Image 1 (cartoon, helix red, strand yellow):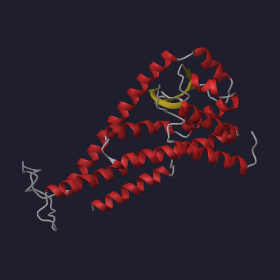
Image 2 (cartoon, helix red, strand yellow):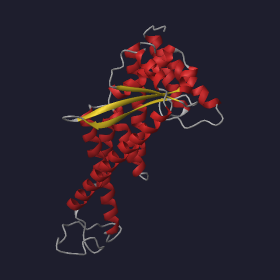
Image 3 (spheres, one colour):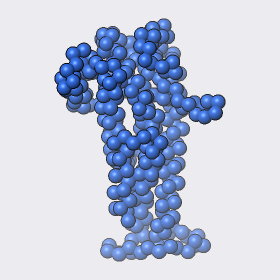
Image 4 (cartoon, helix red, strand yellow):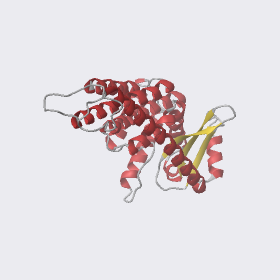
Amino acid sequence: MALTLFIIGVLGLFIFERRVNYTRSIVLILGSYGLVVSEVFIVFYSISHLHSWYKFHFHIPNLGDHDYFSQNNPIDIPSILVLSLAATITVFLLGLILSQVSLRVMSRKLLEKSNLEISEELKSKHPWLSSDYQVIVIKDKQPDAYTFTLIKKGKRRLKAENWIIITSGLTDILNDDEIEMVLAHEFSHTFEHDTRYSHLIYTIATIVFFDPMLKLFKYLIHENHEYNADLQAVKLIGKPRALASALFKMLKKQISTKKRGIATGIISSKKPFILKRIEKLLDYAELNKIND
């Protein structure tokens, strides 16, 4: 049973990685991870109730027994599933709260470091960015760009407030076309709803730091999101070579900087993955005969 739950959970995570819609994504994350947690509970209690190396003892115990979790009591599978569901929902809600709190704290700090005049000027150059987007240029020598979504209470329902952050170090090394493609890449993350749950998954992975499944899941969705955002940015603006050039310049700058910070956004991956993205963008330009 434990093996079956584990397999179903892994399949659910990989199905999500193939990009179902947003509502089903959250359900699939919660359900699949719940199954994996169930598997862990079953293995744990199986070991604690082991009567011999080849025989397990399963029945529903006497609910009036106060020594419910003693080694002498048999395993109660329904109770384990309920416990795993409660643990999953608790971790999920805790991750949601902590992720939004940390993002709000970060947004206030970013505003303190921002140059509002340059931010407004940059946003006005790109009319495809809707008015509900916050485009913030901050003073930071490290070339980087990233985005996140704050969930806020509206008049009738919750609403999403999207932030795109560009560092001054990025604007110093990129030309206008490259900056536009970086903005389009970050915009694509929010348009595809990546930022509505990616930070949540990263927070949960931090809370449950000992779980290799979540680390794998975090890695898979990160790669998927970056590839997809590159593709959507190219479809929106149509300058794959400019985005490839921007990635190369940012990677080169990051490598050459002796005391570089940790990249948080568009180049927050290892060098081979960045080079693979550049290769895919150039292949796309060649295949579609785009000479931007």
